[in-house]
Image 1: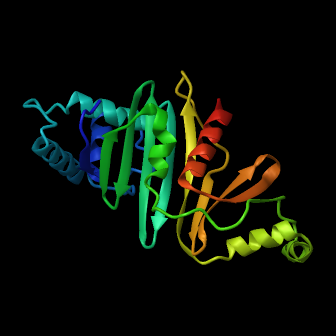
Image 2: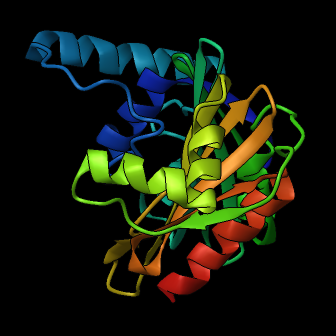
Image 3: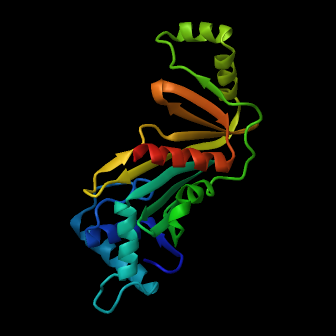
Length: 242
């Protein structure tokens, strides 16, 4: 595994995956797929080797550094993944915290650049939520509502009589400055991947940060969310996959 932080173009990271046949790069890190002629593919592969060479990550026989390969392989085939998209204003960042055993890596994609560094395998969810902007939790209390009615008109009429639903709608209508969604997945010993059925979503509003999560029975909880609250919810989602 890499013993130092590393910054790579997302395209170069994807080329390492392809060259070393490591599988599929996580969606939060992968470049937008596109068809490229064979000659251009080869040229880009060569350019990627040049970039890696500048960082001392390719030897004289054009073999990619073994620690980098192990790190990228972990990102592609982690036993546990905490990932998400984080939007603040006009900027969206892709985040992946991945671990297998005691090896763990945080990858953050900003535009076309990926930042990699080792992290503690015990702090995967914390490492993800630390990428969110600092914002206090929403001012208010948690509210849980049932699944929406088949008729939107019926749903709106019900809200006039249901204080919980009315509160949920008021929170949902707050002006926002950003938001995102966070997901959890795990692989078993046969490399079969299972993801949490619903992502943990959050909204950064003018009255603080709120989370929303679909619970069993299609109930929806909306609650004030400090970063620690989001990390706790992610840990609970991971336990539910066990």
